[in-house]
Image (cartoon, rainbow, N blue to C red):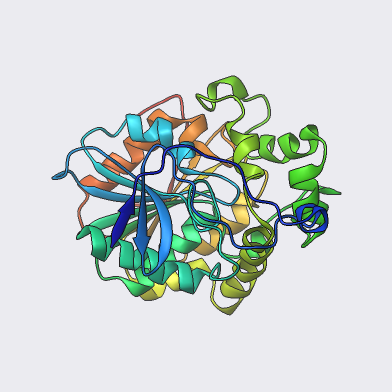
Length: 326
């Protein structure tokens, strides 16, 4: 393992106008950020560490088109935990290679990261697509003992996209629109990650964070992540994978999630004995930003249960209240 001190984002290199328009097709180096760039099996990852070294270890993996900044608010509310955040391959300050975006490759990569950091009894906290990589990491590492999945359905069959928005997720067309189209197009996609009416001014310290993260992906990261995600969950959904892992898992959804059919997802997750589900009312696809107090409380409570499997029915929770509701 080697580390590199990299603090400035820099500018992406552009080889030609055509390649630039195509959404940056070449590999791009890690740019770093507030954390440290670590070389793991020859891949440079931007890693951030917070909290006491002897705290309960959490590995937080953000979603597609996001970065470690999307966990800022919940990290601040869990000061007793040792929290490791990683910019996913192709995102944020991590490297953007031309391949390796499938969940199995990334699972092995983050499993190796845990070895490099010598972390044990780790709870993975994944948001959206980061949940896939969290499950994949658990499939390759015995260091993981619990999982928290936020805003992710068992597979893409439970996903929902509004009319016309499929274009932004189309190979070649999507990256071009996301990086070179009108700002309002990208902002609209980012906005859908939150419940209607949510005050976006409270989401990030940097008001342009969502736009910056969404536009930071190069073409391979964008297209391969979407394609491989669908193929991987089609082979075996997250519900079935969690059943095989037999590890305690907590699944959190916002009732106003606009990327997934919450009820259809819950039916499948609730059929697995090791999974506890929680639904936060008046919250969208990004509970750790929209309801960080409640999410932090849920994670803390989940950690306190140890390795016990859920013995009570799933519950629905109101983000404005701390106590459980029937």
